[in-house]
Amino acid sequence: MILHTLIDYDTLRVIWWLLLGVLLIGFAVMDGFDLGTDILLPFVARSDIERRVVINAIGPVWEGNQVWLILGGGAIFAAWPPLYAVSFSGFYLAMFAILFALILRPVGFKYRSKRDSRAWRAGWDWALFIGGLVPALVMGVAVGNVLQGVPFHLNNDLRIFYDGTTLFELLNPFGLLAGVLSVAMLTMHGAGWLVLKTNGEVAARARTLGSLAALITVVLFVLGGVWLWLGIEGYRIISAVAVAGPSNPLAKTVEVASGAWFANYAAHPWMMAGPVLGLLGALASFALLRSKAEIGALLASTVSIFGIISTVGLSMFPFILPSSIDPRSSLTVWDASSSHLTLFIMLVVTIIFLPIIVAYTTWVYSVLWGKVEPREIERDGSHAY
Image (tube, rainbow, N blue to C red):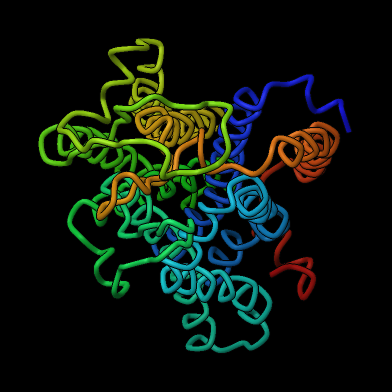
């Protein structure tokens, strides 16, 4: 397998850092409007038929959209094993909460309309709300904690030890701010989808709530940046770095310093595109929702999601998971990856199959294009959710 030497090890590491970002953004964009729609369900739909319209707006696509979550988890497992070990074990309770909420969604979709009972259906509507709110909130909280550093360390044998205590320590003020920002961002995105897929009062309420969510997204994103600058220390490497060396996080020296998360923007001004797109996308989403521009509003919220998530990755580079109790154990792009050969094989597989997934997804959405109408729900009867 000599072909893998055609791409340098350090280049492959950067490529997989970028691909991990693509997969996470893909999940936030594709499954994000599903989660946002679930969050909006109790508030944009007043009657049973309106609630069924909202559910059927995402019913045919939500399951396929979750493929991006599986792809992201698989990429972390294969390309960044130490990152997988720390995050999926240290954040175990948070992951369990997300899993529980995601399980509620398919059960809610399948069983919600099985009984013609107002209490039964209302209960499942709130279950779907929880299925959208909890993943959006907890994932945002996790990102907020990553920016502050996670309590883990490595011993001399590179064994990983997570020194955190309970789920509640993750619910710190900055983590909660990031969580609420995530909820607002995906609610904005879900509103854009509902405006595109529905008519009448449902679309009108979605425009109103989506506009509010867009403004909250802007305010919280700015507040988070100011808080990160003034009140949260970042990490930087102060020793020589072997960018193509073996994966050994302990072979470096790391310093914790105020403003370190903003150093990349001074060194590489083009990275400012991340926060700029995050802000402008949310502002454009607000304006386009108010002006009833359906496709434009959804595209604008997509740009905002891309910018906000990119901002986190660009600010932290080359760190992917800093340690709050032993900065030297922090995981970076240069010392936490799989082998050169593994990354190359994964890249070949990705080059083959990712375009197929994108092409198939595009075809599915083209087939399902159009608005969900109440009369169609009533006519289809048991075939609709």
